[in-house]
Length: 341
Image 1 (tube, rainbow, N blue to C red):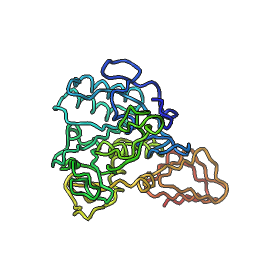
Image 2 (cartoon, one colour):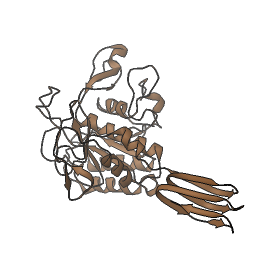
Image 3 (cartoon, rainbow, N blue to C red):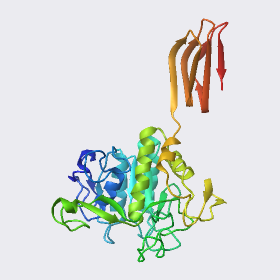
Image 4 (spheres, rainbow, N blue to C red):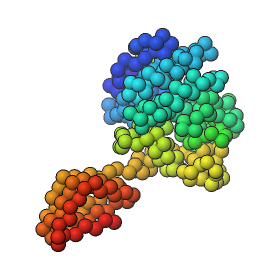
């Protein structure tokens, strides 16, 4: 992956699931635009920036044709999480159900990131149907992404963008929507990709679309969240993205059984992702450890962790946390005080 807007963020040599070998291989036009949405480099005076412009990009290549076997797809997932993937973005779908694929995805969700789970994001599909394409619809912990138009609607043949030939799939398994129309991003270099212009003019595409473009927006947001707090589990990342979404488009979002993160709508899920709100919602821990307090001291944070602290000299230690205070060991000597809020 030697695109000038991507090469500095590429991690390792990747993996080709078709042959079971490294490095990864360019097998089509799809991967480079998706990678640019996630992690094109920022502030390098070149064209575009990704949602998570400092993230590391791991390439797993697969033709994703009907000739691919479930085992090849499963091998791609297993290689990714076993080699350190934090988030896996999947701009594909429509295969026949397979326990081999589902077992690999479940292993990814459960065992990735040393047991915290690798976040798995899937595109909903572009057929304007009332159901989500497989395998996005197979496992509840998968984060399923639909496409929103520039006007905040579910992308559909009548939405404001004028692209009448497709619509975002929707239904009971839809979790969230993200921008999916007229997305500028990286392309295969020169005339090799969607933009067939020669030279550097062909290195970018201005009109990438589909739930394929919505999906990496959400994967990039998951990467941002984990960059702020890498201890979060898959479920915690999903909860943050869903609970901070904007209720756009004038749809009827309602309290729905099995949807605990706010009001929900079957065309929009929890709504349009809000990167600022999601990152701001990450609850960081303030650590106050191995300290002797000899004067009045305030310790505050979203979460506070106290370890091996002694309060002496008639001092007061005040601990204020928004969500949780964990005290492992504290000694408050006679005449001193501890206040926990």
